[in-house]
Image (cartoon, rainbow, N blue to C red; front, side, top):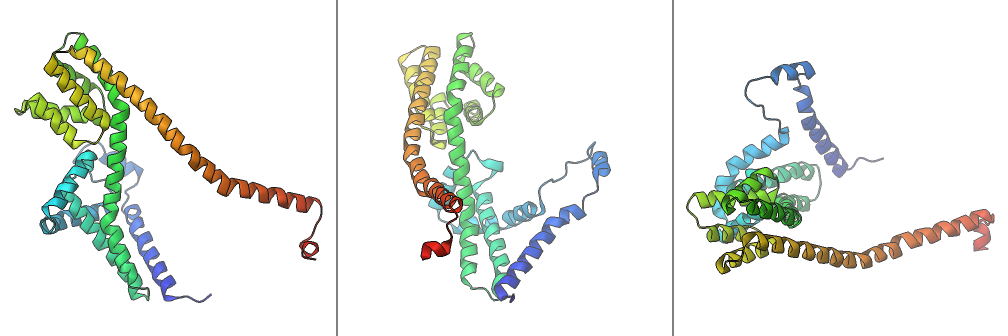
Length: 298
């Protein structure tokens, strides 16, 4: 087999990747030394070598690349980070630095293949993947977080209604429930409570929480709760009604998703499973009757 320049470049990149992956193994002190070091001293950075490299490059490139982007782009990144709950405590500048670092690493790695004889188009492809890859990850994190808010919010409101009915004030009950539970709903409530402690009104804090998230249930809860507060409706009853409406909407949404999934399942069965089953039956008949290919072609 002839070794082409593309294959040589790929093998070289694979060798470099394997070497980088093996560096932590070479530096491993073994189980006894790790056990001795775990008892005290400063906490060690347990991230991989690649993660530490990206982190350092992001810290250096973020302040340089972020000012070159338009204000609208930075505001868009801030909104996406809010939807995702600021994963890993990412700021806009830090996130842009991660994008720049991944782009530089991807282009540098692909440059090795280009020097080995590959097409320069791979450089452009690597740059596009490195720059837009974090956007895809962030969009997925935001979607999963908003879906979790949709699932957890009815239970949160039920517990909050019971706590308010027990005699606690609304803010104290909200703090007690948010500290007792985990998840994005509790995080958002604690953020709003901190804003209230800093002087923001309850209405402004809840409106800010609504702007940070794209969950329809959360927006409905905030609007209904503010309206109930203005009209003087008992808060515990309003919370129970909101939770019941959210569960009803979740059931309807699940039915709609199931209805949309049925044609997709039918398409997959028709295009993949049925032809394979027919081919298997046909081959079984041919082999069972001892019919040879030469006889079929006659």
